[in-house]
Every structure is written in C-alpha cells, then in structure tokens.
Length: 231
Image (tube, rainbow, N blue to C red; front, top):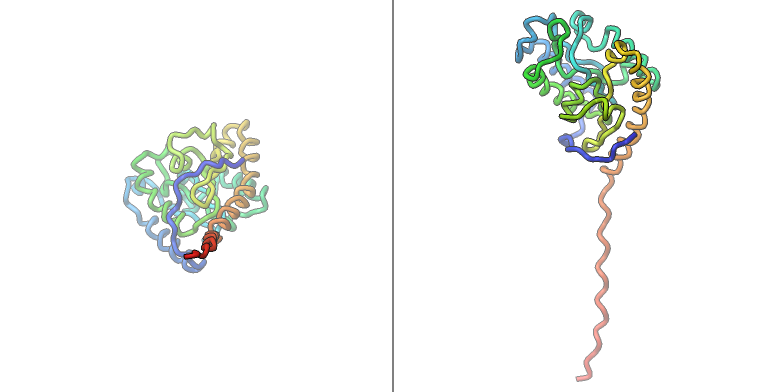
C-alpha cells in the first residue's frame, strides 16, 4: 500500500561508483569500530557498522545489535537474522543483495532499549550510510528506526505502508524479533514484507520521473497581422 504523502527530500549528492561507495562504507565501518561518542562502547565487545551491497536498492535498518551481533560484529545474525533471511528469500533476495544496519551500532547492556542520547550519537553514521548507498527503499525494522523518519507515529498504525521521502520510499515494519516473541505478528510481518518489491517499483518510477527533463514551454502565439493604415 503506497501512502502518497510527501516527506522531506534526501540531500542530492553526485552519483558514486560502486567501488567508491564500498571504500566510503569501509572507512565509516572503521570509525564505528573505534567510536567512543556514547558510553555503549564501554560495555560492548565491538561495533556493528552494517554490511551488504554498497549499491543496494533496499536498506534495512534495525534497532541495535544483540548478543550474537555483539560477538560477531555483524548485524542480524541471531534468531531475528534467520527470520529476516527467510523474509528476504520470500521476495527472491539474499542478504548479500541488500544492506543491513542498525540505528545504534553498539549493543546496549542486557539488550535494553537504546537511550535517546545513544541514538543521537549514532544517527550521523546511519545518515552517512544512507547518503553513500542511496537506496531506493528503506525498510525500518522496529519502532526506534521508524521514529527516525516518522517521529511520533505508532508502528501499529503505519506498518507496511510505504511513504514517500524525496525520490525514495520508507516502509515501516515490525522488528523480526517482535514476530518471534508474538506469534500473532508473524503473518503480519510476512505480509508486509511481500509488499517491498512494489515499493521498489514505485521508487523506480519516482526516480525516472525526476530524471526526465522538464517540458519545454509552449511557443508564444504569433503576433496578429497588423492592418495597414490607409493614411
């Protein structure tokens, strides 16, 4: 389902080559691994920058690393990650064809919710990832990543609804962990995820329309013939 309301546009940047994107993402990942902008680095084993195709059409944003992610330094590698891979497979994709990240890059102690100051410290990394990858569709997984784009909204009200954000679409969804903990949400998440290809197709149309040159203005009407004076 496409919500046609328009939100603020992403910053236009010159197109980058795949190799240039990959290099910028490697540099950003190194920054994340050494980040000390909030206290989370003191209790986490390692930063979890994100991974995937630097040219991905789809960027998936979770909330924060969990225990398994903290051990491996990779996003979505526990039970939630296995479910996410099943969701991707349902639309003919693998995790190597998308980019997966979190709004917070270090694990909060005991898997608690990320705090506002921790999110504020990490959001610039996410914003840079979006600018570098320039995805056509962003899928937010859970309320914290959703709130980055739609503050004050309720995920129960807007889940599965693609909303325009410049020339890309944002699709808010429940976090895969929520579906694992609440069986009643599993079918909802699966149904919402099957709408992602339609969001990509719609984003392609938006970008194609934006790339078309503006129509030329109509030629001014010819001057009416002047009547010759008899005097």
